[in-house]
Image 1 (spheres, rainbow, N blue to C red):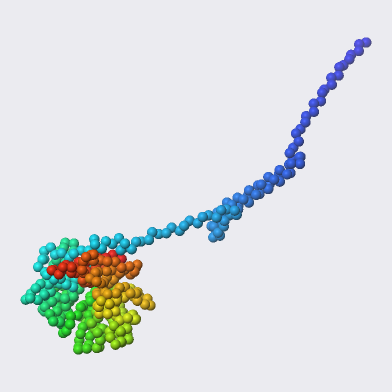
Image 2 (image 1 turned 135 degrees about the vertical axis):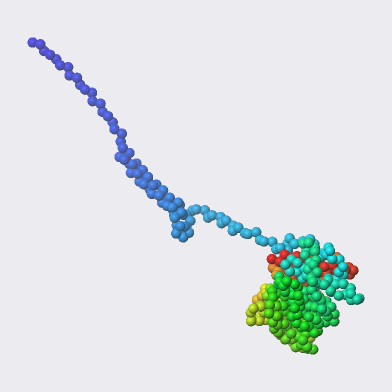
Length: 406
């Protein structure tokens, strides 16, 4: 009998160790909570620092994130101030002498008046031993050419010419006073003067604006009247009467449609002790305004925004005042003023044989005439200041300066 032995194989058992999950440790919940907190905080930070600063201003809410630095405000850009036109003004360079290239036989010139860039003035000669302003001239500065106007002279002198696009007005004057106040329609085929009014005494100066002419005239021994004439109809109206007073010798002004004249508000012992009122009316209006000067007023001028006057009759102590529309009191411009005129932005005047200019905008005074030049003021028109160089008395030297008038 055979005995079979079977060998038993014993299989070794291998044990596999598995890693423990982080969740199963004590750190798992802690890390999960931390991640959640960080995520929520990130969302909050994004909303607070990114979302809200962009969204809230869209609905008009001013919002600045916490801890954000306050932005440095940008300075408001300041516009470069526009320089005053007079800062670049060269008085010596702007001075121009009136020279006639083709007309050389006039010894005297008078009553210059600019309009539209051209100059009208009277020309004088010695006739029968007398200085006679016998011709009316129109001068073009660009070509330095003068045209003698073919107008008849019934009396002795041409005086006080004024002109615009449509009309010429002047006084056809007698040598010893009186004459005819004349108007010429420039649109007519020929220049033919029409008599506005016969003047019996004195030498009244016409003031022209568009188709209106104003003047003050002695009409009696103690009576003067302020007249206004519409040249299109030749209808003349008496606007004011001066009885037994020197205000009738004070020139009216008609500038930019504003007519002004002076009269007494409170009478004193002498003219200079009077307190005057300046009356102002805009043509086309029935309303007359009163400017209370608290001084004596002579030869007032107004451009509608400013009114100026002298407080005496051209003496060495005469003061020049101006007053802005709506102002409560006048401004003293200068003392010792002989004559003055007004532009849109300035007053020009003569003092100590020198021509000065006072600007309304900066209240500064400038010298116009030359350093060693003796000057006689002749007027302001068309933005130009005109004077006579009387340094030498051998002949009349007429000069003007075009002043920045804006």
